[in-house]
Length: 101
Image (tube, rainbow, N blue to C red; front, side, top):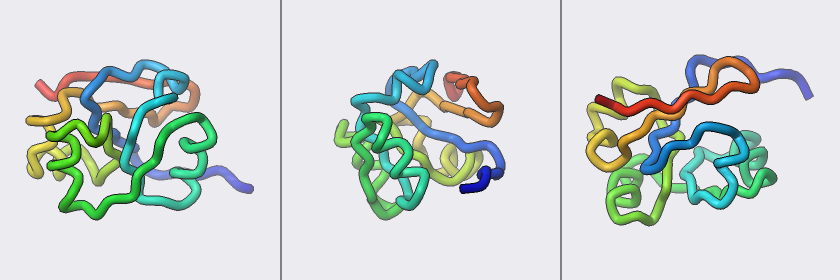
């Protein structure tokens, strides 16, 4: 298997996540595929949901977090109202948790 390279991977979260280990036990929406499989093997309950169902699932507490689009689109979709944290992990072995505002 080769490496994967892409832009900032953003996860909108209701709780701060400061390390990869803290993902364990969380219920997170992923688009599927290899990324979802990696997180599932790390103890994450991965959920497949269409984009239109992410906001209500976060709002109702069905999800702890969601891997979705990018910061500008996520903000436009209102995710900052229901998930106060952004988890960004571009550098390997580091995680960064921040608040929207």
